Length: 255
Image (cartoon, rainbow, N blue to C red; front, side, top):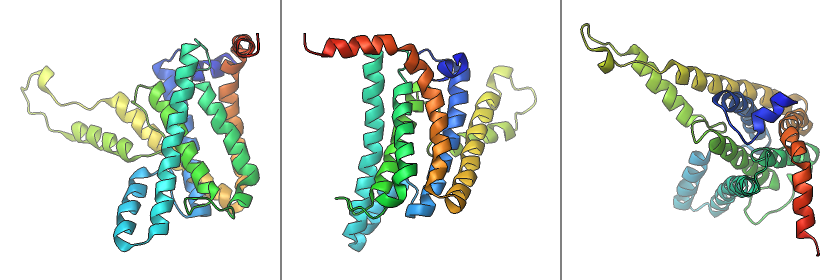
């Protein structure tokens, strides 16, 4: 319990950030790849979504433009929700500063696992089913959590920046330092960053394999175990704040 509280608690350490980042990268890879099998698009990849807007504006496919804009709106709304929850918890001096958005993500994943197949047929104003909007919202929510936790060092829902950083460190590792060059002028790879980013990439890929297999052979319900992991991560700090939260609730009631 103490370890779980440490992973999502208010006071951060590099080790806690890396450990949580790896778990969330696996989760993001699973949702992203599994969701593609269901809705035919990667809901964490906003670069592609924005490109879709431009392409289909030119081609005149306005339904696809509307769907992409809805996905973009949902992703940004998720990130905005994290900012609201984290800043509110900080102002209240709560331990569950970062656990609140993860708790919301877990609850929405449970809803997705239990009702995802039904929502595929529901209409929305954005020409895409609620499932797409929910998945994009979850990705924005999660990416903002780890971004704020790690001061923007770690990302978990998209790998473009991660792959860029890995390439940079590999290039530095392969750089030929001429003999006799002073030590302070030598180009050296940051092995710590290289291990971190390589681990994040590996966990995202592993999550993708598990996610694709889960959706293919089990269906929507496969996300329930992932939601249970997020619940296990978010509940300990929340339980530590129960007295404080109860006092805040009473303070909002009628006097």
